[in-house]
Structures are given as C-alpha cells and as structure tokens.
Image (tube, rainbow, N blue to C red; front, side, top):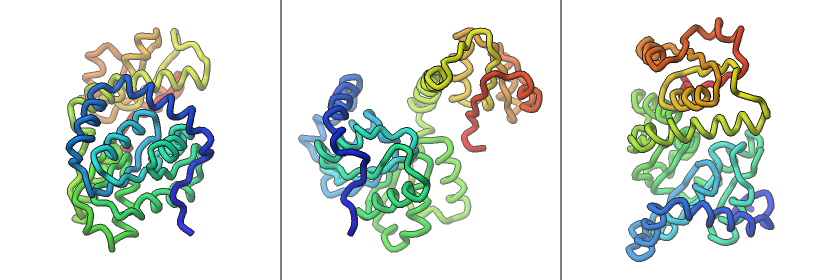
Length: 275
C-alpha cells in the first residue's frame, strides 16, 4: 500500500509549526507573494514535485505554492539537513505530503524521491538534480506531462547541462543558481555564514589562529574564505582555475596546491560545485 507521507514522528508537528511561523516572519517578500497567491490562484491545477532541503524556509515556500492552488509533494534533497518537526508540521498542519526522515539511508532516500514523483508532476523543483535524474531514468511514461522545472545548486546545474549537451534533457529547467540574488547573496553570504556555524557546532574549535583551507574560489568559496578570515584564521585557497586563483591572491589570500595545503591545514572546506 502506497504511503501518503513518510516522516519520523507526526507528534513533532506542534514544534515544527512554531518554527515555520517564526521563519516566515523573516521572509516578508514570500509572505506578500503568498497573500497574492491566495487571491489569484495562479497555480491552480498544477502538480509540483519538490526535492529540496526540508527546513523551515522550504516549508514556507511549499505553503506559498499550495496557497497558489498547486498540489505539492516534497522529499529531501539531503537527508542530513531534514528537520523532522518541520516535515511533521507540513503533513499535519498544511496537508502537504512529505517524504523525508533525517538520516535516512540511500535506499529510503530514493524511495522517497519516487513517492514524490507519484503525483505525476507538471513542474519539478530540485536541489542537486537527483529528482530530475530519477524522472528521466525511471519515469519515461510521465515525463511528457512536465512543462518545466527549477534547479538551485551549482552541482545540479552542472549535471543538467551535461544532460542537455548529450541531448537527453526532456524539458526546460531554470538554473536558479545563475540568478544574481542566488550566487551573490545566498552562495556568498548564506553559505559563508552557515559553513562556519556548522564547523563551530560540530567541533567547538577556536578558528582564530588556525590554518583554514578552502578548496574552490567560486561564490561559495569566497563567502567561506571571507568569514574564516574575519574570525582570525590564516586562510589558504586551492583552486584549479588560474583566474580565480589570481583573484584569491588579489583578495589577500594565500594560494597553493592542495597537496601542500593538506600538510598544514587545520580545517578543510570543499566548495567546488562537484567539479
């Protein structure tokens, strides 16, 4: 029997609701869009399959799409980032089918993607291109229903461009990562801050005075390097693109080969876009 949802504990919904509402207060533009969507219903009749990080921010996006009249299903693009209370709240309070459990194994991860695709989507929303890849490989019978999609990461965009080059990408997908508001702000400032935050929470180490190696100097790498430098680290950049390596040098960072940096680094962060 097919499950209508698969979350860790539906009893976590109350806590998740509070956190979703709190996050919503910090998303005024999306809130305005939601109010307009409630009145205009621009997505009425559309089915949207989303494979994204199951967080409070994504929850507000899903609720906005539903307010616009869409039928939405959500699974996790990364099992390690899933917030189980948020998943529970979306199911119980928002009546949105969610297939995501924090720490789920690889088999469960792909089962959840397939469950999300069972709505036979008209639109896909992806983070890393796993949903789109699964759709193309295993759901040829429903792919003609899809009119378009979005992909928000560098990694996913690289995969999709390879598919397009090989002539196998069956429908147009917007590369959200190419938007200025994505790579100039989310990639640089968002990834920069959240990476440092994650390191501090995981290690409880002092960053000041440490040797901090950043592998890759794209927008995410710039953000991480900038924040590490701001906290007093000696930052070393490794980069295969000579122009970006020169840019890192001009920005005041040391640049060296990874084999040399690996001998002296205390922290290592890879921000290479899956290259």
